[in-house]
Image 1 (tube, rainbow, N blue to C red):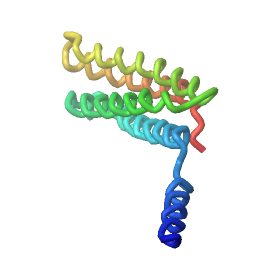
Image 2: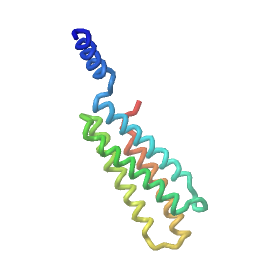
Image 3: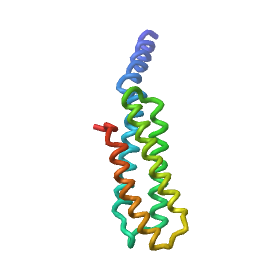
Image 4: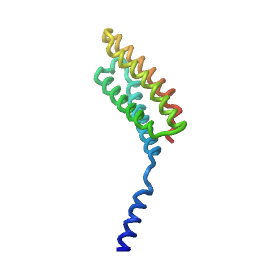
Length: 138
């Protein structure tokens, strides 16, 4: 019986070791979201008026929105500067994404809309660099 109790104690102690803290898990989530957003922004930035499609843009913006939600959810478990950086990045970048989504709904000609969107994607990329630059994922 003593051996069994000792084994249980060791098992419980070992189960608690080596796991990530909530803050580490949150930081990893923020960095995963940042990487996902960066991928979508790069794809959007690479589009031209001749290669942009509404479905492609909607898909990329949906992925960005999903990653922004992950980032927002992770902020709860961050503290200090990391929390402030993530919050600022989320607020700044969310505003830019919202603006682009609204532009999708304007009634411009197809050619004008494509040109406006490709210009907006350059702004989105600049906004990403500004908003997420301070978020350290090294």
